[in-house]
Image (cartoon, rainbow, N blue to C red):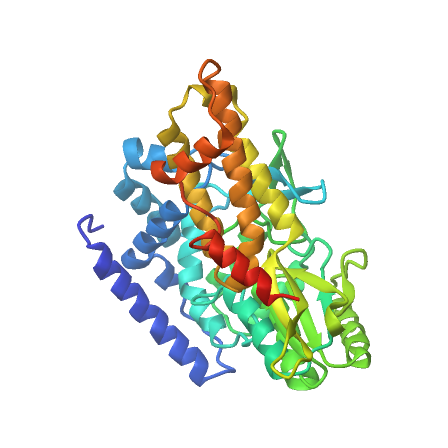
Amino acid sequence: MNAGMPANHTKAKVRQLQNTLYRASKASPRRRFHALYDKIYREDVMRMAWIRVKANGGSAGVDQETIDYIVQEYGEDQFIEECTKVLINKTYRASPVRRHEIPKGDGKMRPLGIPTLRDRVTQMAAKIVLEPIFEADFQDCSFGFRPKRSAHDAIRRIRETAEQRKVSWVVDVDITGYFDNIPHDKLMKMVEQRVSDRRMLKLIRLWLTAGVMKEGKVQDTTLGSPQGGVISPLLANLYLHYLDLIWAKQYAHVGTLVRYADDMVILCRYKEQAAEAIQILKAVFQKLELTMNTSKSKLVNLWMGKEGFDFLGHTHRRMPYWGKNGKIIYFLRSYPSKKAMKKMRARVREVFSPRTRLGWPLHGLIKLLNPIIQGWKNYYAKIDPGVANQFLAKIDWHIHRRFCLWWNRKHKKRKASQANVFALLPVAGLKTVSAWASRIDLGEERRKAV
């Protein structure tokens, strides 16, 4: 294997392969691709797969191999070469994923399946090859985990639809345990509509049935595609592509479907259309062997700002403003949801809570917090800054307040006033979540609202 292959050259070759596959798939919607397996273990594909896996980071799987270990001790070229050889020799076997649970906002736990590094690289190589084939089929209403598409794009679609069409009712849909309940047989039939290469199909089945390692015991997996796997988002999108296709062909007149992975909303003009949309979804879900979560799914009345709905961390609600003719006009506004605000505050508390933080210098804490703050600002302040900044300013105040408490605990003999600490932080380089340049802007935005 050529250890000296430049990253730019690798990227260019992989992009060329993907463009070729995409054009072939787009030109022949009924074509089934039969020679894909040999493309997975191409040198440029495997090297690009490792580059992406390394950039994504993540913890070790059941074999305890970490990215740092591969880079610093084992050797990246040797690792890539070994991953390639088992594919060429057809001796590749998928390891069970390591079960890891993270807390959800409702107090429950979200199960994640963490594959080994070797499995992640192999899955990434397969994704590089398969993604352009399925991308040629995917509908415009789908935004999650797709190239050149983002959560911001999905939210903009909602806002554009609300502006261009009279949207008064929204069906906010939640699927019960989507990733854990995808039937393998039906998913594989959807894959086989585009892929006939038996070796590639065998690889996907290996990942789906690899099992889960929990408390030292391996549990068989007969349903689902574990969250945490590299290939899982692509397969999850493919399975719900059936819904996207049916909606676009038969039910577009009922309302506008906007989907981000398993999160979706349908924007309707009339209540009758929204009710019809619910029945259509239930019928489609039944065919896909999925269940609508009735406790979380809801019908929302947007008329005159009566209700709002949460989607992708934002609350979307009509707010009243004075029109030029003196009448009140309602516009759909988007701002951080209560759940998102709670998470941001909790994250700030996590930063300050360890007692060892009292020994940190001010610039050390600021250096730790600034990337977190910038991430929140990039996500929440760009969609609808006029309203979002009113909420994000509260997070800024919370951060400043926590700094004030930290400072006075650290310097018990020379405590500072809140005003002095607040004045010091911007000078020390602390960023702000809110995009407002000054408090004057705050006054102007408040005067605009009724």
